Amino acid sequence: MIVDVRCYSITPRKMKTYLETFEKFALPVQERAGMNLLGYFVHSVGSLNKVTHLWGFDSLAHMEEVRAKRDADPAWAEYLGKTEGMVQAQENSITSPASFSPIK
Image 1 (cartoon, one colour):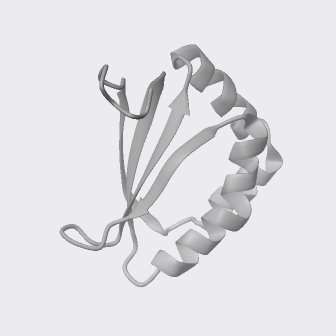
Image 2: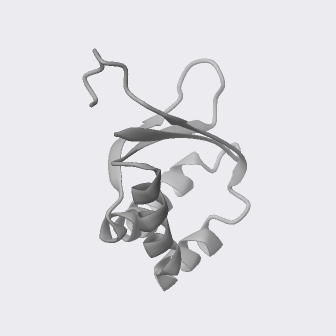
Image 3: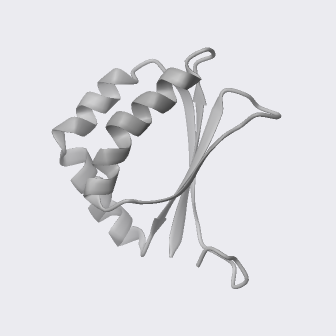
């Protein structure tokens, strides 16, 4: 398994709207595409107005395959339009679990 770790900085005072929009519009599209959400977190100490989400994939090829399915769904473009201007910055990394990680 590989884990795509994504950290987004959200426009101040837009976190509630962003999370509601993500849950209602983005998550169903990603689930239909076969994406595996491992966790979704809101930062409350340190850098604020940030979310971190973890997505599990069997391989890089699997990640590319399900992302292509997600991107082809017209509802994904609708979601992107609804959140335009809410995400100020994005960081992501592809990680692999260590042998002792509870996430395998």
